[in-house]
Image (cartoon, rainbow, N blue to C red; front, side):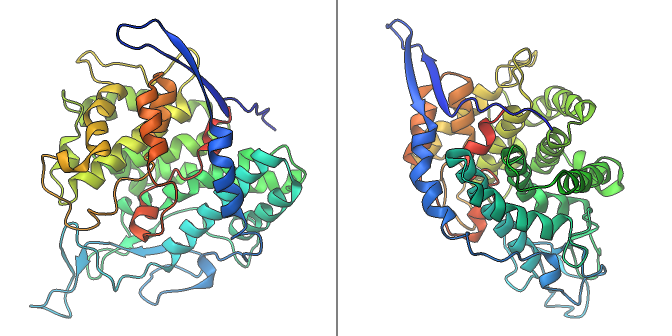
Length: 390
């Protein structure tokens, strides 16, 4: 079992102000999160596990234990109703099968709340309740999910599954972090913990070797970033240091130089029909990679390419538009424009790592909880206490 030390729950940040000497300001993330976490966790104490086996779509080419979802932006062709679906970028088809995605997001929310409550209180009840859900998803032969995404984001008449469906399991990241949070409890037996980590190791192997995983890695936009974020988180859980090293190098040599422009924007996201939401999402995912993989000797938040690209540049570009969305100079998102921003994790992680109180304060000023399914889906970081465990 990895030894885990809680650092960063009380965060001390050195701030340099123009014209002033450097000062020290303490941010107690513990206190900021405590009321919210302990309120939210009450919603889940009596929640029963719901896994992929709780629902099945007849359109799935998989089994009861296989995760299945359908491509969001694909619709029936009115000119050929029985033919293959056609794509409408940014426009979500409400008739898609979403039950497995919803179950996974629910699992993530439950895990995040219970894991965070255990961090705050060390009360065994929270770890015990989390263990029940972990066993259902990863151990119980009747209810567990198969460790692959062969049938995610299928498209009628085109594909039974696609590599870009891998983005659906970004909601396993806080599950992985919640597992790490309760490792020092007695809630999971050694055998159960081994079985759960084996599930993640198997899924990690699939992500890094299957043609869908390779296609997602090389997709080139936020999908590549989210592949790396997942692989890094699951490698951290399973102590797969070579894979973590790969992800660090991939961030430095591929993701950052290929996706960020010299002004800190993400041109591939700005070209989409939801440029604001996608820009927030990609920046959050990149910051999450840095949060997972940064070490004392290799701080990815301060890593800078030869062209001057780094996380601070990305934050400098987006922060004004997060503080005042009316300043956004590009087109509005075709859907969910009003729902953003919320507590974007890039502001929190960047504020801490870069000693920037303005980012931290902006993060703190934004809504901490949200109910819109699209926002929940695009916010894999909902319980930051899980992320400050090292």
